Length: 493
Ligand SMILES: Nc1ncnc2c1ncn2[C@@H]1O[C@H](COP(=O)(O)OP(=O)(O)OP(=O)(O)O)[C@@H](O)[C@H]1O
Ligand SMILES: [Mg+2]
Image (cartoon, rainbow, N blue to C red):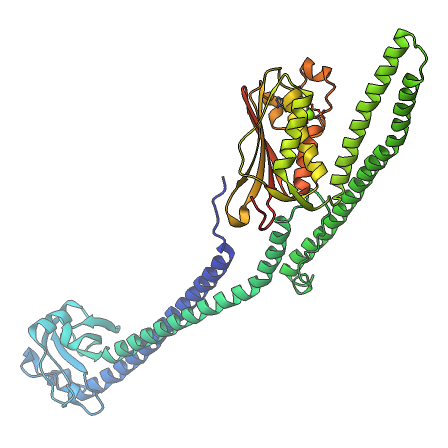
């Protein structure tokens, strides 16, 4: 499974990458400048050291013999004209420092402490300038040794304190500039990335709007498009936007074509059913006419006539069902008048009781009138369909109970009609598809009764046309169909 990426991944990556690049650049520039400034300054100090050394040798004079051997006096050459404050001088005889002093700011020349001398001694200073640490007071020195003769040499040093101060100031300045640049670059990159990703968000918004639309059925007006400004082929985001617009255009055409062909099929079914009504009525009429004609018919002809009548009756009811379904599909508006469901159910149950006395029919105690806005005839038909199922698909002696109740609170209040029976229940394989057209159980009993499987499709279609829904729960010994309908505002219960 791919790792889940944060929704801001791109934004964060861009900002972090910018900040990282700028940090690297600032650090490289900073380090290079510090190193080169240090080497320039060091070069300068070395040049000064050369000058100081030559002044010192001048002061010592051409004859090294004048230098007091044995280290009793301080190296006076550091006090010659031109030597700068801090200049260090030492005299070394046979490799051992015998005298060492430096020029302080009052132009005195204090002698180095034993420790400082030891540091100087340990540095083994040669003819090339060397950096040597002389303890906390004096700090780092740049020093060079010059042989005066085979025994005596002098050491001249210059303090590095100024150079070090300059370098630390430079480092501080570089750090300050780096941090400021980072903060500015971070904020700038964030704002810039936000700004440049905003069109992408609008494009995503358009795609999201489409994904929440119902496209699988009904008339679809796919009017959502990415705004022109975000569908400009000359930018990267614009190309995405333009591609999405082309795709939407394509999908929209496909949906329109789908809708047109569905409409055509529906109109065909509705026209065909309508056209079949008249010839069917004629067949029924002629059969009836012949039977009532008064002549004595042979027994088999009378039987055939009876079959013609009953089958044309059945076909008429199938055609009526198909026509109703086709009209519901077309979205044709049903009547909308106040209908009292309690009286609808009472009438239906009493009809069922009359036609099937071998079942036990009951109406659960209700709380009086439950009024919905709708088509009384169609509502009566769907309750009849449920009761007919409870009669046809259950054995004699089954108890059938119908009820009308009101459920839910305020806005969500709805009228609920239930039809419950304690028959064998619906085949578990069928239960999920029971509201689909021509879905029926294949028991021999069902076939014998000539069931078509349109009854429940009509129940659902009519309920939906009223803004409601139908559902079922079934297990052996308990099957309950439910029709939920929105309740009329302020209707009495
Ligand atoms: N109360 C019930 N008990 C058991 N099975 C049922 C019940 N109601 C419906 N069914 C099953 O559901 C199937 C579909 O019912 P539906 O009313 O849609 O069609 P039908 O009754 O077979 O035919 P039609 O109602 O069009 O004459 C039925 O064939 C039957 O198998
Ligand atoms: Mg039925």
